[in-house]
Image (tube, rainbow, N blue to C red):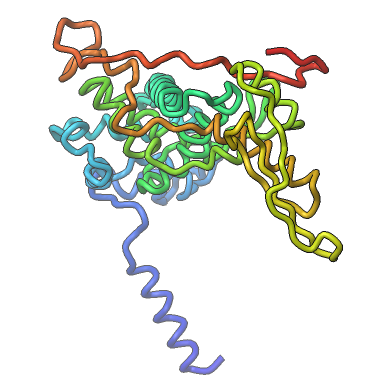
Length: 356
């Protein structure tokens, strides 16, 4: 190694040592920690000092917590005073963090507050908001598809993705847990999903139910979800026939509308399904059977994906009082007009039996 390479290596090492640490130390009471200092004539501890573990036990800087609250538009709700920063820290602390904290603090001390209860309340609220909004927006949606759509809007993976978009990943305090006979393994995405749920609960606790619903609407329900791909049929022609009978309409009939290349290697057929004189579905395919299959699917999708215009959507939770406070107080309420009841969903091919 030449003199120039040695000089370059020393300069690179000096820059790394002079660079600021990844964790701010301005808010820590004692830095560096006494465990990391070597004292002459002191016995070597049985457990060596691990800087990564020590860094994971330290709380994020208050400036980062305040910046996070303001970045997601909740600065006026969560950070009304300097003491409120602890609420944001609690929302970012998963219950699994207590395991590693108690392991490295056997003598006790101030136990950090976790978001276990907040996440449970927020999860229930998000499920409520998503279910009533989807039911009011898509009144004909089957129950199984409705459950899948709720999961797609406010499920664990969606919550984890939203938390990453919020910039909450560096603020998360958690500890990976292995799988046990009673509990599944805890992954990073599971812990990260608890942050948006906790924030929803805090908005509900500090403001009102309409404010929490608006928060969920802005970050979750406003996202585009492909509900069409969730609707699958083992036999769409049979399902369409049962739906037509349920709605007391004329029996569906298939008609060949267009065709090209019947005797070629790439024929295309366009089939329409009619109930009386009304076309209720249309599909194409390389064979008459495929085109008829897709036409039946299209007819079912037209019914199940019927969407109420956004300005006409009314949800039951609108009847709760407006303004700050709980939902049981006496206060003015919004008007609510119950929608018309629609036909129940058609269930078929269930355990080999067909019924409606």
